[in-house]
Image (cartoon, rainbow, N blue to C red; front, side, top):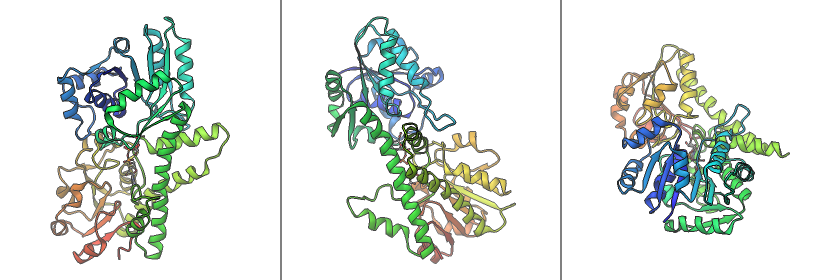
Length: 433
Ligand code: UGA
């Protein structure tokens, strides 16, 4: 069992640190944000992530998981140090790596024994080489540092399960001892471990997210064709997905990808490519198609309602996807802003993201339940595919609405059934008439 420091308690850091503790290691999770550390030490979580609270409590109680602002102490006590600090996008789309540099520099300054320094934050290719440079440059105690790239592939909403049962773990390093240590650390997960050089590992992360984003934009482009021809995107996706080379995952047409990772990482990959002399035009088109999804959706709302001014529009779902409270790059923000500009009266509900939504969306009426949103609505928009919305009593919904119009950005319902129930149902890439 190992002593591990995790620098940064964002999604990746908090979930990784907790899960490393869960598989038996002693873990020090560090953050400069004292408020965050206080929240964690009071037994609460700064994020909504199903299953994580119980796991944190279990491991804190077992004396294996610590939350601290004391960077130096955590680093000194640990042999393996994960850099999980933020790499937010700068205005030009490149990642801001100053937090990564600061972390590496401080590790170098305070370490007096050998350390394995692992970059887990999503970073551009060649960041590992920069980290090594910083570690060597600011090394007053002449300590041996090994550098490893170990990207994380967990998703918000299923983060714990993704971490503990991954499809693969990627370990990029040219240091044999570091490789052995990381292999031991991950051994309890019993999963496929791929060993690579550092640069390949860094590219695997950006290429994976960009590929998944491409898959989503591809199916959304096909949805446009289905819509124009009267074909059904759900059937097309199923038929394509049955080919094991393609697979059904990430073929859900909808409002396009959001969240903090895909938009930022596709942008970063385009920028990295441009910097080294390759114009990644495919990814630029992926971005364009993604942006058009939201534009197309609001056009549908306009088409269905004609005049938006003064209309009472109900919105179900605000988070960028279900099972998270994350509002970053959520389609709901763009769509609601547009509706408000047109003078619509928006009422909304989300099972988890209300508190965060209130910070970014003003001037809308927040409701306590889906049925409250439905009441007297002249149109109901579905923007996030929470299970709870799939299970709504549609007869009741119809009787409560002023005008039984549903515009569904996530294709939650069967168009034939909706018609039978007396709804005017507008969906994406399917024949809804
Ligand atoms: C994504 C990746 O899936 C993770 O592997 C990766 O670790 C993470 O980014 C990251 O880099 O940190 P996440 O952003 O949590 O995870 O969410 P996803 O479940 O991948 O969904 C991303 C977006 O794609 C959402 O807006 C979702 O609604 C959209 N999506 C997904 C679709 O529009 N259609 C689909 O078929 C699937």
